[in-house]
Image 1 (tube, helix red, strand yellow):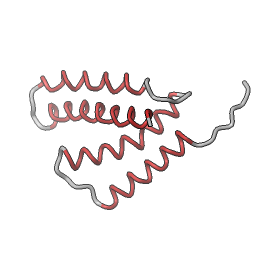
Image 2 (cartoon, rainbow, N blue to C red):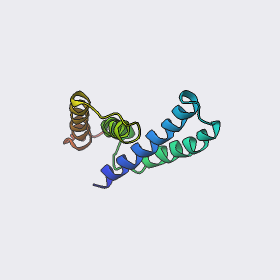
Image 3 (cartoon, helix red, strand yellow):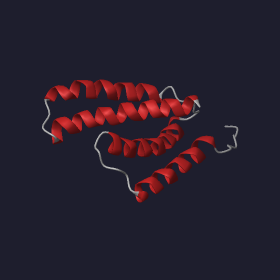
Image 4 (cartoon, one colour):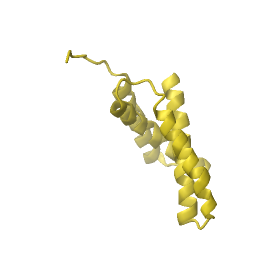
Length: 111
């Protein structure tokens, strides 16, 4: 449960940080949007180091599924575009895949 909470917080930080740069560079907002954007991306990177995974690559791969689902929620909440059935089906598939990557049984080899 702690891992999932960290992933959600990391996704919010990453999406908000990236959106700040999007707003500056694509929506014509002030360059000052880059300041909270950079801070948010630093928080995102820090949060990913707090996840419970023996290997960074596996943790990052699992995070990818959460990021996709959170991005579609952002699409709906912040941008006013409701995800369609294909968006939701894809996000569900990604979350199932992320769960398999993160929680699947592992055979630990010596060496």
